[in-house]
Image (cartoon, rainbow, N blue to C red; front, side, top):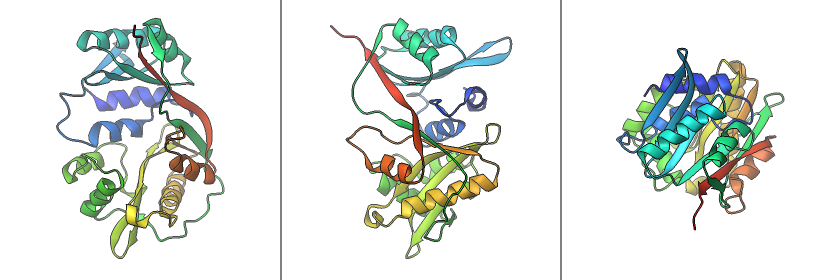
Length: 268
């Protein structure tokens, strides 16, 4: 599997409503260690150019990207060959993927979903709290594990994230309280698209409600703007069961442009 090749296709196809950004792949595939056997991937090429990729999360979930419905169908066929399919998630703004998924008998399911929110980077306010790039990896990992308990992120896996393009230390922003990482925002800049993704953001439970998540996001976005970013995107939960992150990003000027559509296997 070539993560770089997957990212090249993702960058080439990216637009504000796209399901995937190069940062999603870097974070998603590197945040844990020892999961290669659970996460088979495959790349498709035509005339030497990458035209599709598939990333299965066993036992039965598929992530994919493709230039058109035909190649999306090839990914879905591969998925059915290696496991018993259960679910696929695509963006409401990518009809070619929706067409391929529905052509193979998947049906839309109700339940949790994610919004795709965007904003341009004009008129970003300054953060209220002092924020700085990460220097304490152990403290950064501790904060993530507390914010997303239980978590499989470790110091080893986080260093793998840091070694994966397009990671940049200046976009890995933290806010400290009493010398400890209290909140953080990791942002990923796709230079070719001038688009920055926020993924992930977290606050240690004891420090929630103080505006620190907003501060680290603003600090990261301001730095990304200085590095050439023109648009930012983030994908919080959109359903009523988990409303706080979306509320935060809307308060920062993000607006919805698409949402994830979840498909499952027709039963009965």
